[in-house]
Image (cartoon, rainbow, N blue to C red; front, side, top):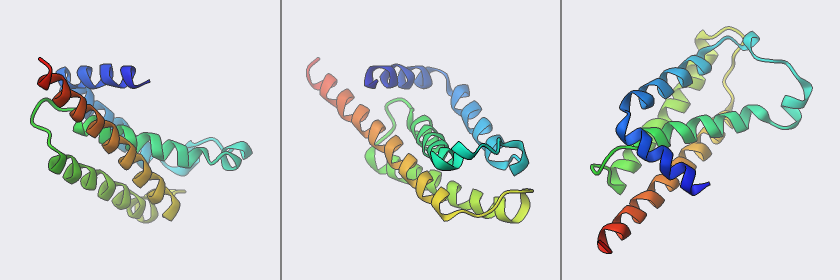
Length: 136
């Protein structure tokens, strides 16, 4: 799994448009009216919505931090905070402006979990790159 993520990280380093495309798709999904989503009972039982938020914001953070050598731990923290703040803002936007969508505190928690996962994965890759440079 980490090898696959490492390959994704390399792809994103070379293809910045893919990061922008991911953000656009995420924004579209987050502002779709609530009636555009399936109303399956098992969605609620399995908390599919929360898992989607974790994956979506983990991906946003991972993609946003998948940049060449300029990324540092401090910059990664700042970008992660921006991603999390975006998640909070989206909840307020959904409540105020999106039909059949509402504010959900647990979505914010799921967004935060996703951001932390994306952040930790990038920190892992930063450490691996530093270790590779030391042995070259």
